[in-house]
Structures are given as C-alpha cells and as structure tokens.
Image 1 (cartoon, rainbow, N blue to C red):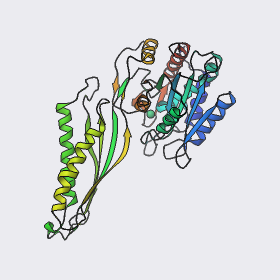
Image 2 (cartoon, rainbow, N blue to C red):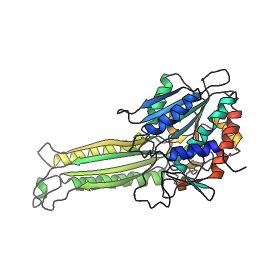
Image 3 (cartoon, protein in one colour):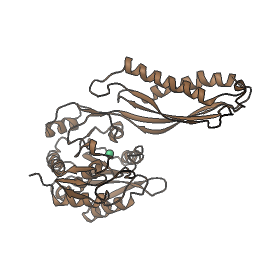
Image 4 (spheres, rainbow, N blue to C red):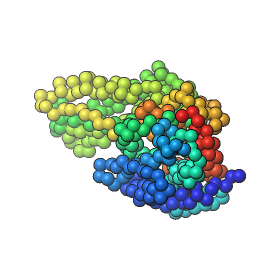
Length: 393
Ligand SMILES: [Zn+2]
C-alpha cells in the first residue's frame, strides 16, 4: 500500500498551513502540537528563545511501564525558508495534493516528516512500547541551528539520555551517517582614512582585506591538495571561501573600512577552529602588524565575529542504535552528504544520531517544493518497524 494514513496527511496539511518562515514566530505551530499531545495525555515541555517568540517542543511517549528513560528521539525543525522571489504554481502555505505529491513550503523540508510522526502518536500510545519515543521539534534551524542547542542542553539538565536520535531531514529514507560542518565568520578591517593623493598617509582597508582574501584562498587550496580527505563525500575535503565584501565608496579617500564574510564547510573529523585560526593568525599577526606600522595613529584594527556554526556529523556505526537502524532499513550503504543538519548537535551531546527522512533534498528550498505520497508511506512503515523493535534499549 502506498497511501499514507489520513492522520499523517491531515497533520502535514495543518503544519504546511502555518507560516513558520524563520523570521516569524513558530508559536502557532508549537502550541497546536502541544495542545494535541496534551489531549492525548502526553506531557510536553518547551524551551524558548530570549524574546519568547519562538519555542522548541519536547514530548515523551513513555514505554509500557510508564518510563521515559533511554528511548529514541524523532527530531525535526519547524521553520521553513522564505518564498519571496519564487514563482509558485500553488499557495505555498497550503498543502496541495496533486499527482501523488503534496506541494507546499516545508512539505519535504521538513513538515512531511513531522506530520508523519505526529500522525503516528495515537498508534504509539496503544503500542506498549519497549522503550520510549521522544518527539523533538526545534526553531530556527534554517538560520543557523539556533533553537536545537537550547533543547539539547535542557535534555541533559533533566537527565534525559536517549540511546538514539533520527533527524528526519529529506534523504529519500536512506540512512545518512555523516555530513559536513558549516561555519561563517564576519571580519571587519579598520585602516586609516587619508586624502587619496597621499596614499602613504593612510592605511587602505580594502587592500589589506584583499590580502586576507588571498590568504583564505591559500588555506582552501592547501586543504584541497593536502587534505584531510574523505572520499565518501562528493567534495572530499574541507572548503573555505570568501562570500561577500563591502568597503570604500569615495574615490578621493583612502578607504578606512572593509568588511568581508567567509564560510567554512569542514569534514566532520576536522575541527573548524583550527581552520579559522589559520585565517585569524594571519590577520592579527601579519596584516595588523603591517597596518599599525603604516601609521602613527591608533586607528587600525581587525576583528572577527562568528555568525553561523553548525557542527558536522559522523555517526557511530558501532552504536546499538545505528546498527538497529541499519538492520531495519536494510540500508548498509555509507552515505555522506554536503548539507548540514541538527544531527551533529545531538551526536555531540552523546546521543548516537543518523539522518533519515522522507522526501528529496533537491526539492527543498525551491518553488513548488513537494514530497511524494509514497515517501510519506515509506516513512510510516519505517517508523512502525522501528517502534516495534526498540528492544535494544
Ligand atoms: Zn531542513
């Protein structure tokens, strides 16, 4: 049977219908889910952002003895990317079923997965589970995984130690065991303004920024040539590149300011701080020294700010949870992907984690995003098998 349950379809319809673009509050969605789970008799707790306009939700469906220790986390992010500038054929905030597909923003990334999980809760409640099942919904994944760390910290504080976690990002239900980490930095260079007829009286911030950009490229070339390498990734080395530059603007003045951003996508076994330090040290030891020597004034400075940080994932293949998922899914291929997810955060907290969810990442973030009904059904079957086999805990 390839038709998903009505419960899953109704939940996907409800979730897609709530506009949770990252810049907006997600409380409408979170409260809808919380109220539903409470009506079914399950306690939920929320963790909020600083302004209390967004929340994560965590809910435990206890085992047959009423216990919540151990168990498996099913995790998804509630936010979606914007639709501006995309010429949709349907209303992006209404789930539209056509040609065996559900169209709508977030249908693949990742309200299809969340809806499938929520649709199964009444079944789980009747199942006499051997181990608890936890539902973890986060906010602001798309703008830097800002929500999940709060929830993961709270898990530790509450002494909840799940034995495994599935992040249901779209993988076509394949088991993904690794992804790269992703970090972004902003760098501000302040030189010294002067009349452009006497460049030596100033410190040209753009020229020093250019030298830093060249150094970033050198670090990138070094990692490409000298590794470390992991051939299971399509780009088998860590990368770094400059992504934006702003500075200057007045032709008769030596530019005093320049700002640039660079992004690092690193193999999970490579520490991002080491790559960043190669860039920071060059800036502070080499370039800033020259900038300070070039003027008697105390103006020159270089500062860095970390703007985005998502750790990589490298699953533990020996963990009983990973072995269980491999056995149940029948997928023994080692799959490593370039895109980041919250999986690395759970893994870092000591919870064995893999990525496995319905839909195709190639449909995500685009106009006419969709998920097939067959993928939803495949996810339901997988969750059914998984929850029937939680005997390792
Ligand atoms: Zn996603």
